[in-house]
Image 1 (cartoon, helix red, strand yellow):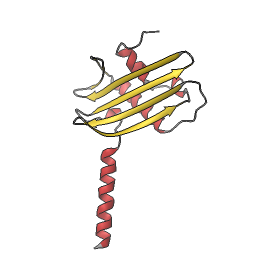
Image 2 (cartoon, rainbow, N blue to C red):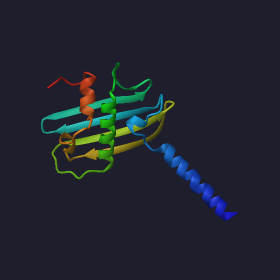
Image 3 (cartoon, rainbow, N blue to C red):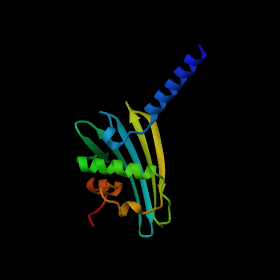
Image 4 (cartoon, one colour):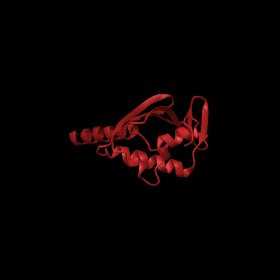
Amino acid sequence: MKPILVISLLTLFASVAALASLPSFSQLAPEDRLHVSYHSRGCFHDRKYEIDFQRGASVTARTSGRTVKLSSQEITGLDKLLEFYRSRPPGGCTTEDRITISYFRAGKEISSERYVDRSCATYEMKGVTRFYEVAKKLGLEQAR
C-alpha cells in the first residue's frame, strides 16, 4: 500500500509542476497569455515595456490598445530568446535587462519567471526576436 501512495504523490507533484511551468511562445494554448515586463537600462538608453502575447487564430502581441500579429519566424525567435534567458548567461556588460514573464490561463496567473541579463549577447545572436523589436513593431519605439 505504501509504494502505491508514494507513486501517486510523485505523479501528482509532477503533474502540478508541468501545469505550472511557463510555456514557450509557440506552445501557447488558445486564449492563454504571456505577460512580459521588460526593462533595459544601459549607458545610452532606459526602456520599459509591458507586452501581452496571446494565441487566438495566431500569436499576437498587444500593448496600450495596439495589437500586431507575429510571424512564425518572430515566434521561433522569441522561443530562442526565452531559451537563452533560461540558460542564465554570465554578465559583464554595462546594459542590464530585467525580464519578468507571467503565464495566465483563464485570467488567472499560473506561474512566472524572472531573469536578469547583463551579457549583451542577444545583440550578436542570429534568429532571436528581442522584445525591443516587438515593441518597435507595436509602435513603442522609433525606427532607427
